[in-house]
Image 1 (cartoon, rainbow, N blue to C red):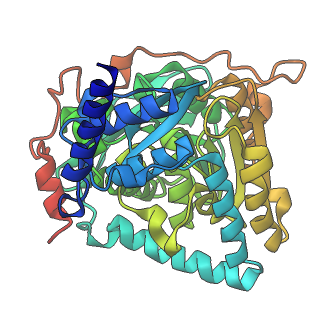
Image 2: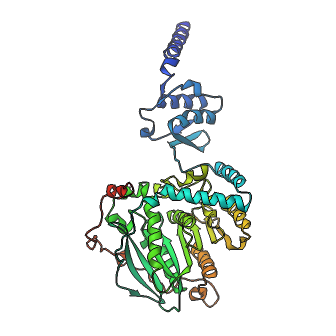
Image 3: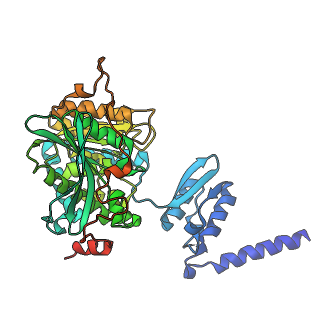
Length: 459
């Protein structure tokens, strides 16, 4: 009986070996291949069923190697699937994420990029090429001319040392971006302008930390403008939430920032020589990219975003392929394009900025050193903090903006010199709306179809 079973097993094995030939590309279902990997290497692999459903692996058995992770690479790379180790003998599969590398791959790319710009001449050439390529990748030149309509401005609210008014600006025909303008109550002459693009945080620009930040900057003597991401906040009155993850959202957000700045600089007390920008997460992506392509910005503070191995997981940050410029770049090199202008990079220990002090910051520092302005660059790192624009990060930014833009830091300091955010009113969300709680005040020409917007870039 035992010999019979052995014979059957050998015949079965032989049958399957003969059934899989080069004529069929040795094809096997991915799910079956995963089971073979689990059995052969004594591991457990978890994955969503939709990720592997109906997928076939060509030359499946030919991709196996004695080493588990080499085998996984050979097989999963062919399916646009990546894997991560979750523990001893445990792995997880997920769809390929174009915006991510490993930290080691990010470090290797920085080492390579360093060889492309060993001196100021080579860097200036690369910077110019990158800027031109980014401009083309974003398709900004294809955008319609800026509408000539006047901003819609709500009633001003008077607070302790500052005022707030809500503003909507038509940045493309029928496309509005809403924000809130915070200004000092008392000022003399020209004052700094600070853009505050929003990031991917719950409650958008209405959240308390955003109100604290802009109000404090206003109390210090600047006009600070916070504004919505595309298809978030009041922009969601015009567009679906999924439109935020369309690639042209990145272009629209860059246009929003530039055209908001166009308007702010028409204000009689705006100082065009003292323009700053700061934002966290997706707002940090906007901060770096807008600074790289708009020379009007003199001071930038990207928060919880600059990384060599993470380019921004939302198409609104990376969808237009700007990171493919120069045969491959990353947010570290893009942030370096701010040089020789002042920049503070704020990082933390619990997201993809965790290695900034030892990996990313030295790269930017080297670029600033080419201009002999290392004193214009700072890194505030908070190893025990996470992905936010929390109080400690804000305080670091306040000090840097005060120093570089000539603001009065004492306006937000107590008698012992500590920075405090007292005397700031956190308004309820509806107080920050331009178009009403249900969008009842939207202009008649407001576009509500993203396809119409996309066609604006094809004319």
